[in-house]
Image (cartoon, rainbow, N blue to C red):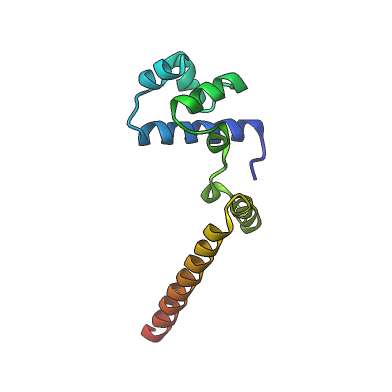
Length: 125
C-alpha cells in the first residue's frame, strides 16, 4: 500500500497526468477547464503540491471522472502480492453480480491459457 503522504501525492499526480494525456489535453487546457493555474497543476502532476478537496473536485470534473478514480492506487505499482490482492478485492466489491461472473469466467480462461503455456514450455525444454 501507499506508505507516505508523498507517495499518495505522486500517485495522484500520475493518475491526473495519465488521464489528461489520454484525453489529449495539455496542462493549459486542463487548467482552463478546471479554473486552476497551469503552474499549480504542473506541481500536482509531479507530486510536489498538496491538493485541496476543492481543487481535486475541480480537476476530476474537468477530466470527466471522480476524485475516487484519481486517488486510486494502481495495482501494478504495489509491491507485495497481498497488497495487490487487497486492491483488486476492493475494486471487485464495487461491481454488480453479473460483472463479477464475467470477470470470474475471464480469470478461468486466463488461468487455462497460462497453464497451457507453462505445459508447452516444459515440453519444449
